Length: 291
Ligand code: UTP
Image 1: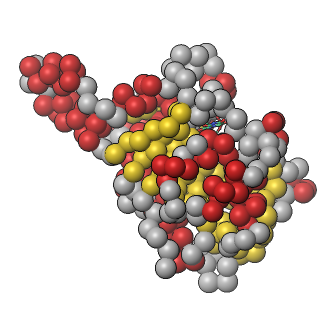
Image 2: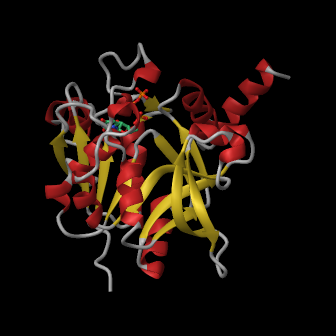
């Protein structure tokens, strides 16, 4: 019987160079998608999936992320004085949302290294990894779906999405066979980083959600720097595959790469269209632009 998945690690120490100049001073995780910083979407997903502890792996200049989930006494007092009860509830709600712990990654030595920085805070139990730039619109939440697979199958789970065509070459791609009973589940046998289309072992691109067993920490400790001189999470997971079962899972829902300018624009438009307060007005505006 597996221990439950109670903790989620958010690697957020990267430099966000794809979003320069916006990310020169502001952490990319704090860029607003409609009216919430992108990190908040990931935290809300984690909580809605039953996660109790949120672990941020941060770096220099990322303090705004922790402040965002802390109480803001001056702001709250001002909103109270002005009788802005709804906004006060929003501000307090964010601060009460979750138990946030954080650890610093002193140098951005890679995603695998960032996850390894959370080893002591996670301890000897399975855990989730959420890459905050991957914002996922899904019901039930993507991580909740994955935890269901972890509990059923008893092995680590990597979220994947199906990409037919050359777009697959931008991702790590899963090798493996489809489960007989559930075509969304793959028995993973390997992973290939950014393959050419003709060399891709499947149509399953690995995205920024993982449920991992704690053994991966020991394996990451032994992992040598790989592509780009960085310690890659995929190399740790490949080592895990030699010892334990690992599954791919084609999640139900839609993923946006909000760490990329175009992906952020797509997410902004689609999330704005879904907002009851101004979705219809926004749709009419878009029609006016492109009749
Ligand atoms: P990315 O490569 O997408 O993020 O890493 P980046 O390096 O911040 O962005 P670009 O490519 O320069 O625009 C995926 C995730 O891993 C984290 C990043 O913060 C991001 O959430 N990461 C990456 C770390 O925490 N530490 C690292 O050393 C590398």
